[in-house]
Length: 63
Image (cartoon, rainbow, N blue to C red; front, top):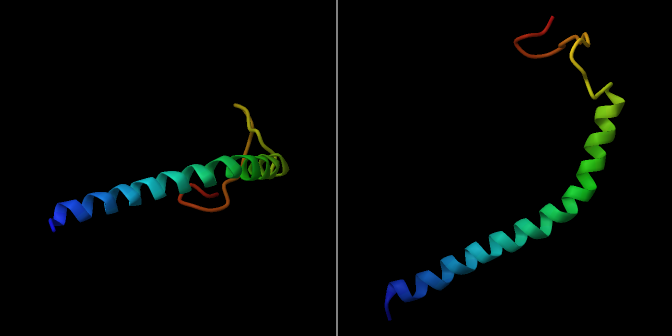
């Protein structure tokens, strides 16, 4: 039995599993996390427009 013959189906199954898991998670996640992140942005005063004054409270540009 050849090593290539047993590795190729294994790698193909890993790729197929990754892709099916990716699409199974990204589609529901878009509808769950999108509205949550949008509402949090609105609660924090967003969306910001040019000319708004903001105070940066963390990071190298704070002050």
